Image 1 (tube, one colour):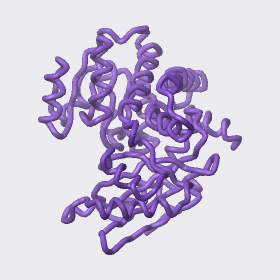
Image 2 (cartoon, helix red, strand yellow; image 1 turned 90 degrees about the vertical axis):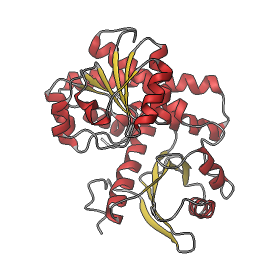
Image 3 (cartoon, helix red, strand yellow; image 1 turned 180 degrees about the horizontal axis):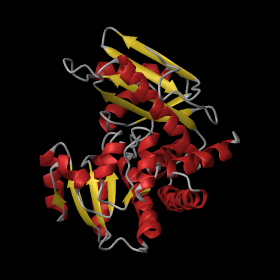
Image 4 (cartoon, helix red, strand yellow; image 1 turned 180 degrees about the vertical axis):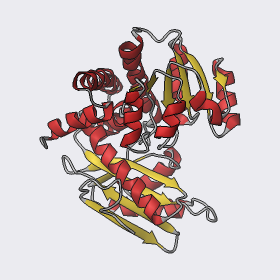
Length: 340
């Protein structure tokens, strides 16, 4: 098992393994940076092929949360937890309460939120044990979708020369909470939407609801569209998969869409614009931070809508400096944190 040699390691403040034999809880919690005394990030619950795979994931995700918070203007650093789901054992209230005890043991230095495999009902159980939880009363998905929608508007303006989304073709990967909310916003704006999900019945139902089109998930990366919006698990963009794309831009809410930096360079070499996920998917984090300080819906929306401007700044900087969009965004993070 390796930590410092993991591709996700970025001078993290801490990484801890928590085990509760009685409930079967096995979880890694990573704090990348604390800002204003805390790091924020979701609890991911999924099967992992190994503990090393979970370590790699939690390190990457927590570092991305710091970048997301800095560029979103949120007074927090990044953290994350990954629970190793056991397919032979159900996700029980007792296990969730045990995870709540883990969160509580950080004394507010780790504030948790939803992620893959952990929804609002799960968080409500966790909140029965610790107050260091957000997105129970204000679920994150609509806010994440709103920020992603604003980012897509920016990409359409920059890459397509479009000041409206009417007629813009968007292929969405993932029909879960965020993907579905994003699809609704896009259709309402007049975009032409294609949806794919490994749960084909879910994709078909959403497409039927919206008058959109659903396709086989294995065909989505080959679909002709203006914008690809990955809204499922990360790592979808590799050098090989980028070569298959028939789009002019990628802008979606999934975390860690680039499998490695080479994928970002492949996008740039093909002239495909990319909205870094840690910029465009910050809506849920923004809403969660507003919960900690007193929630006002209009203020939250105003804050989230600034994502459009940030995405434009990233695209402009990448073009001006002849670097990838991820490199441009990371330089902005370093400047704002005073590390360069």
